[in-house]
Structures are given as C-alpha cells and as structure tokens.
Figure 1 (tube, rainbow, N blue to C red):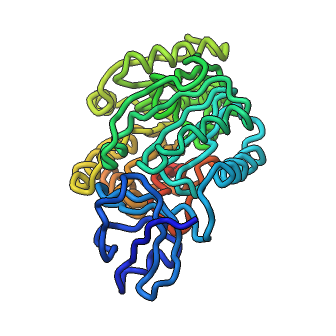
Figure 2: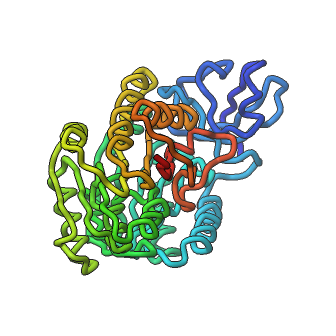
Length: 393
C-alpha cells in the first residue's frame, strides 16, 4: 500500500538509519500540513531510498514515529503479529505473574501504545495521534485473541498533551472491576480507573522483590511508599518493623488493604501520611537509624528545564538516607525522571554519600522489569534508574 511521502533532509539521516524510531520536525525537508494528523506516511532519505512507514503528526516535535522499515500494509494482521510477539516474550519471562506490561510502546515497535494486563483485564494507553486510529482493531484483538473480559482506556498522561490529544479515562469494554493480581511473590489490589499509571507500578516488580532477601529482622524505611509494593516485599521477607511514608490518603488506604490481603502482621507496620522531605528531615534530626531504606520518589521533572531542581531533590532524599542508614545496611534508590541520565543519577548518589561521610558498594544497577524492554537505539525507553547499595561504614 502506498502512503504520502516525506523526505529526511540531507545530513539528518544518521540517527534514524542507526535504528531510532523518531523523526523530528527539523529533520524533514518539507512538512505537508494538509495531511491528516495521525495518518500514515512513507519516509525516504535524501537519496530517495525508502526508510520506513510511520505515524505523522505535524503538531508534534516528534513529527514521525516509525512503525516498520519494511514495505508493508499497516492493518489488522500487522497489529496481530506485533501483539503476539509481545505476548510470547512476556509469557516466557513472567510465568509466575498475573499482571505485566504486554506492550511497551516503541520498545515493542508499536509507538505510542501501552497495554498492561491485570488478570483478564487490560489497560490501554495511547500516547500518539496515529495509534488512536487503530484503537478499534487493538480492542478487537484483545477480546478475540487475548480473551479480555474488561478493557480500560487510561488516556490521562501528559504525553498526550504533547501530541495535541485530550486527557481522559474510559471503560471501553466490560466494566471497571478491581483486580487482585499476583506479582510473583505477593498479591496487590489494582484499581484500573484510578490507580497509578495504568493501575500499579509494574516497572518496579523485580526491584521490589530484592527487598525480600535483605529484610529479615530488619527495621525498614519505605519512602514514597505509594500502595506499598516495597513495604509488602519487606514484610514478606520477615522484617522486624516497616515504616512507610506517603502523602496520598488514597494510596495509603490501598496499602492497608494490601497488608490485609496478604495476611501480613499489621503490628509490624507504621504508616505515616506526611510529606516525605519534611518527615525524613525530622527522622534525621531525631537520630533515627534503619537497616534498610527504600527511596522510590515520583518523577521530579517532566522537562529538561527543571533538571537542576530535580537533581537537588534526589540529592536531599539520598543524603538523608545515608545519614540514617546503619553500618552494613542497604539502600534501594530509584529515579523515574526521563530527563535525568543514569550517569547523572549515580553521581548524585555518590555526592550524597560523601557529604554524609558514608561509603558504599553497588550490588545492583538496574532498570525496569523485563516486561518493560529497552530499545537499544532509544535511551528514552530506559527511563527508570535503580540501584541497590550496601553501606560499608
């Protein structure tokens, strides 16, 4: 099938030729603004050679998102094959889980499409104008080939605004049921309409499980605990006491329900609704010490402009953690700020430790769970940074 043609400027082909899937507005020779937003276009290079087919959006800095580098029709069969390939990977690597990310956008060569599976319920997020045109096909495939009982549309991300798309949530099929999922180690309740991201933070699943083996008889501090994923892992690991901090009443209520759901001892948990920065400062002043500290803050910046402020935030909470950790203790620290690089994050941690007069070794440098693959030519797809540290003195 033939689609309208766009040409990449001479000298702007290297990154795309190397495998990146995005083509920016300044890289295109002439943008035909008469083309419909979200339509398919064929892209050629300055030598008129075929580069690939992708979604077009003249209103976005990312003007083309490539779907394929082969000449082929973008139809029901195309999406069926891509979804089946994505499922094979997850079924192989997430066998003990009833919830996982089925499609991770560009990393599964379906730009702008996120699909999360929660038992037989599916949560869809569309972050590109072009993918909106294929929502019906995607929904039909989930019902027919994946036996979806419920499908929720979670179009409430800021990424949609960059595409000129409205933000909203909607039940597409079935109903908005509350699911109880098993993450491979413990159970969690999921609200598909109101939960974080598309329900819960699936990207931290494997990192959470690390707490199980280091929490026995430990005093654990879980900062920005959200719905309690890391705290639940600590309780499963037989922690002596878990102190969990978050500012959200709704998240903490869900955490309480998750404690009961798993049959954990409520007396081992102290749940505190406070601003994390303020409360860590109080704990530090009081001289409180912990065996294990987990830091899983929300993104401190959505733009490059605010990176300096974000760096300060990461420094402060990690410096507090190094001041409060016992000798020989463990710190788990994360950043999901897309605009903060891994090397910048590691440098912040090092500076925070030095200022606190502590030394540590890195036991693990990680990222998101295996159901959140990384495109090798797109560092943008590796947004989550994670480190497990052991403090030596």
